[in-house]
Image (cartoon, rainbow, N blue to C red; front, side, top):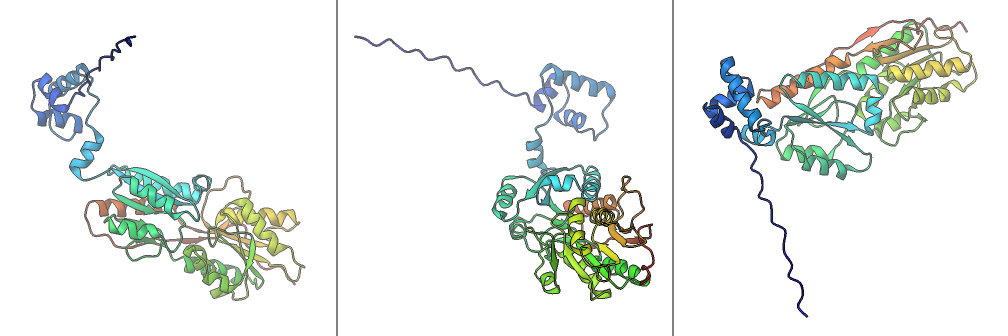
Length: 365
């Protein structure tokens, strides 16, 4: 019995994608003229430009292939931005958002886009895989980051410029430099000058596995996040007997949890001033104080760092102001210089003490 003859479906020929050369020929202009119309970077008369656009519309030409353009110019038009932890943590932190906003604003002048990459704690291989698979012109570490990072060796091997905000700690990364230790010491000095001798300190996470816990000076030596460590050292420079508590995360609720460890003590041992490493942590400290019946600043002075606008806080926080948007723009400016082949050096970033209504003289007795 003969099997039925199978017939194959005809293969449709692949439709050729129109090119800029096709558009130029259709419009009756040179290839260079058509290129100038699409780049917007050359003197082309309105009539000629209209003729080229009409030809592009007739041929359904959407524009130059961005991948081909990047290969021709040796640029991807993208900057990889490494964020520590879950991206939701960065997006819920007003200071982190302001830094990313400033960075994006400055990079838009190049122009270049952002490729956000989240580092998952304990899984460096995941980040390395993402970096190996992506195309980018530079890498930014704009927020809190560990002091050591295997990605640095990988990126240096590829000749990728790296710009940071203090971490990872590596001479191959050019940093926007903040005097973390000095700003924290200034805040501790402020409360000691008000007469406070029982001082507490609420830190940002010292590492990826942070928890609300009392820290001793030896714990600081093992800290993986340099900014949190240096701020704690700054407090101890001024107030060596300060009690230090680590917050598990950088948010308000974490600051509240850490503050409870300091405030759950007899009145004669309870701190009369708490220096927090961020404004969000300080807001959590104020919330915890109110829950146990303490007035701010009559019973407890509270300070922060960042200078955030917190309209839901009914007091003006005493804080160290660092303009996150300006910090992001400085990072972006350094990246732009690196991408252009200009010499880039570390740049200091200014901070300033702002006295609000959350600090006052130490209570009598």
